[in-house]
Image (cartoon, rainbow, N blue to C red; front, side, top):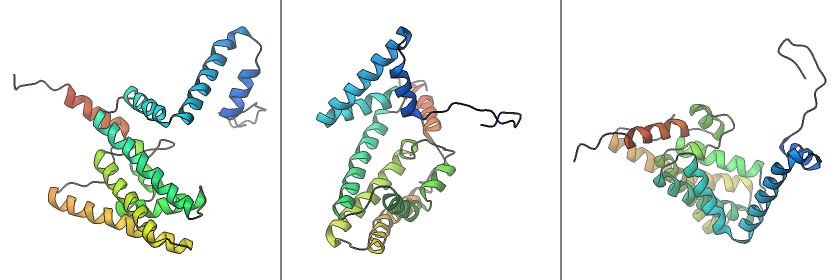
Length: 215
């Protein structure tokens, strides 16, 4: 591995899963609290698999802890539900997770927002962060419309070839694009925003800290 000076040094490296396995194998009592935490996290995950409602409650807790507003959290959870319905539809028709899902998602984004996922993340100044976790309410709503429309059209037409799936994704995305253009024409404001989670929460904080002059 290269150092800051450009020299090569032998370095032990591990990914997250490997690191957890190493920690579990450490006999020291100092590692015991972390082992207990890992066991608790694993138990929570198994409980969530048995009762999906627990996953929703955990997601709400996590988003609240990160400072998101209740309104945004409700929109985000709904977007997760709609996204799952779409991916379930793709699975029903034999599409593979990974490359095919990503390609169709890119088409949906590009059609309604004018940007692929990579371009969208760059526009918002994101790297590894989740794009949807950094969308505004308006962006979430229009993306939900695009994905819901894609699912509904797919269920109606039952596309067989991948080019047919691409066409369905464009048609679904186009419905949201038309809604975006109409909204922008009425309000004079762009929907696709460079705002990310940090800047969105900063705006929310400023609103909440404004003095109430109505009293």
